[in-house]
Length: 86
Image (cartoon, rainbow, N blue to C red):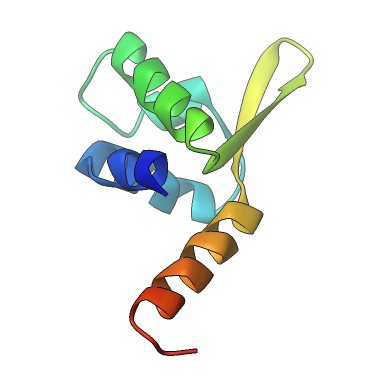
């Protein structure tokens, strides 16, 4: 969970996850929503992927990012156990 919490600690990464809730996007489509460089968005996406929160898939010339809902469910279950709500 430590890597997940590190990834979630940043507001830009949380905003990226929020965007991906609506559907899969390319890095360019994600970058269009932020006033930062594409390199910065790539770094954020790499951290989210490393934490297992997003997945990427090559589709033609593009890499498309999507939420990894399995990890979100695992983190939620862990948090519920932590606060004794299960």
